[in-house]
Amino acid sequence: MWTQQQLDQYQRDGYLIQRGIITPDEVAAMLEASHELMSGRPTPSDVHTVHETSGAIRTVFCVHRQVDVFRAACRSEKIAGPVKQVFGQDGYIFHSKINVKDSFEGTVWLWHQDYGYWGYDGVNDRMMSAMLMLDKTTLHNGCIMMLCGSHKWGVLDHLDDEKSTSYKQWCITPEALRAHLTDESMIVPITGEPGDVCFFDCNLVHGSGHNMSPQPRKTMIYAYASIDNMPRGVEAPRPDWVVSREYEPVTADIQLGPAAA
Ligand code: SIN
Ligand code: MN
Image 1 (cartoon, helix red, strand yellow):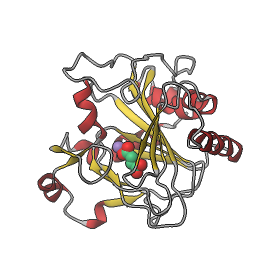
Image 2 (spheres, protein in one colour):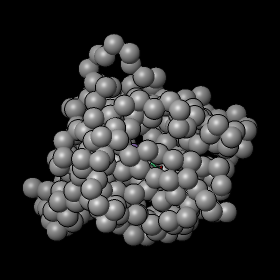
Image 3 (cartoon, rainbow, N blue to C red):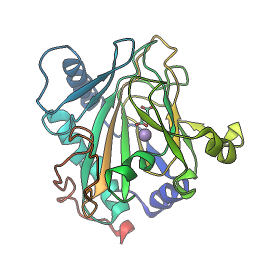
Image 4 (cartoon, rainbow, N blue to C red):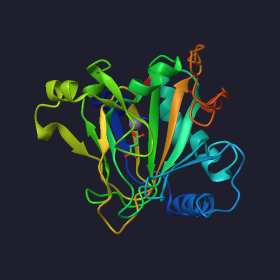
């Protein structure tokens, strides 16, 4: 469980990194499961794969239900415990995805706030993500970058971009970026080792560049919503593989620690 200091840091910066909390054995099992999902052999029925325009696999969605190692990790105390502390109540998985960022082919995630997308799914912003590094993550292979404290800026103007990548992205407009991201020193690259985990707020501005390196950059991202935050009906609901219709509390058996009291 996080200390009060860790909780304060998360609330102040909009993110918190915990180094090495996934063991090498767990990382190895996750990599093996990822390779199996990407092998071309049949996948569990609700898994959904998105390719880059080059044909390389970009993202494998919805791996938290039927793939044992990913199902276990999102319920583990070390991942789900802090989520429950931040929410002050149980959470459920809103979606999960392996972002593959293959060597030379994995490409950009434009600057965005996750809630810039998720607001349209009919949820409120009691949401956060846990990003597990499965490969070494560097400046060269397209590490995620954060704007520290930007979760306090409110939701910036987003536009839908269907040109930059194969996957339609909601990204912050150049005007809003120019108004807010005024100095390059505001950009914090989140580099790390397999087993490191970065927790971040759904309003934190983040993005990542192309993988220019021979090394892949696989990360597993679990997006959580608080259990009282189920999507209201919206006109054009996105599919279940990206906006889960299963509202099972993943953290129900984890007690709130004194830090969250
Ligand atoms: C995301 O914002 O969901 C993904 C960012 C990344 O994988 O670099
Ligand atoms: Mn995102």
